[in-house]
Length: 553
Image (cartoon, rainbow, N blue to C red; front, side, top):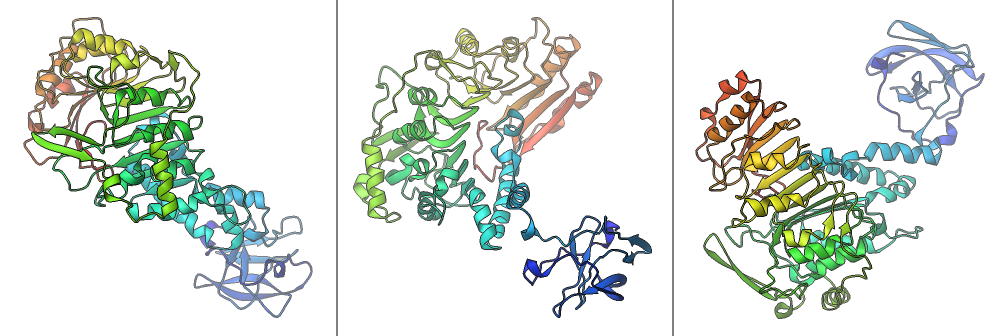
């Protein structure tokens, strides 16, 4: 049949057993109406209850507006859009309904209908994809899963395996209910829902949804028990942002039991770790990463320096911390002891939270330095303490993002980058100690580099060394105030003319849409055309999902 004649998929009102293939029953020709148009079809009657069906060429039941049942039998023929189709015993399709399918085929159909491949993919191309687009796909899939689980008991049993495969939370008030669900098993199934969870996304205080630290100091150190409830977790994305308390973004005072919980409950399964809004010292990053042997992607924002003169290695988290942010004094307090229970969780759960904080320990570790993370291809830390990273080997690393402190000179910067394999293909860099030409020559296979040009006193690039034969895209980024990139762009164009960057095809000027002065009209577009290099302007809107304006967000 022509596909244009197909009406909506038929949903049977009678039990499937009433719809058997017709063989030699009474036949006659009657006119039925499909999508408002009369069609001549073969009609067969076999009971007093009729439902009008039309089978397409693949045996799929299609509905038609009639009180009689359409059957296709040997020797019958029918006409649709002036096309006559003859049916023989060999070609007559049976009536097929979805519940008549074998259960293993039905599972595959429903899985395919709700699966989002990018959601569990930790490869570099997917990691580089717009995060909000993937979250939207996951959201639509979860709506479909929920709808399918309500169709029938059989559908619900099938969807139980996938309903909690990916969990996303945007409001704190749903966490207590979710915790109870993840800790329990559906009737008739031996495993808890949390054991089926492979990806957990936690977004609090992002976008337009406020988070005012509800229950943070009470249970935030285990993400309110959600981490222990999901022992097979492969992807953890947690972005917890303080709402409307300070003018500037500030990290939460985070108890070190959180890092111990990650190392305890998912060391052999976690492939992607993405944390933002939690303050973590560099020595704890080192301690935690040793356990995550399957990690492929690690991005942690709000990493702080470990200062051996004042800090004690892996000591307890203080109850109070004061610091200045843009000349404003900010004080963080752990208020769990002073305020008592928050009221969000029952007494037994609160006791579990307290025990996890008071008795938190690192799990046993028998390895010795250097610690190898064989699958890690992406490492992004907004602060990297080189003294701590010397203990690690990253044989598969291809994407590096790092910030070097203002006091880091060229030699220290060079030693810092020398810790990473020369096979790096993507680098995002913010720092003062190294010019761009010095940076790219450290990595001969570099294809993409992003350099923050809004850092004051960034050294000039001269490109007097050997040519770089792989670099294709250079991004000049302004993550704070708008900066005129014209001089930096001309340096790059001069390098192209001198054949120092023979493969360069794109120079991208990236900035946030701050509403302040821009320099787009001053950019040398004509000069870039002369050397066949595309000059792009990339204006990023304020991020609605993560609510951040930092390059690593």
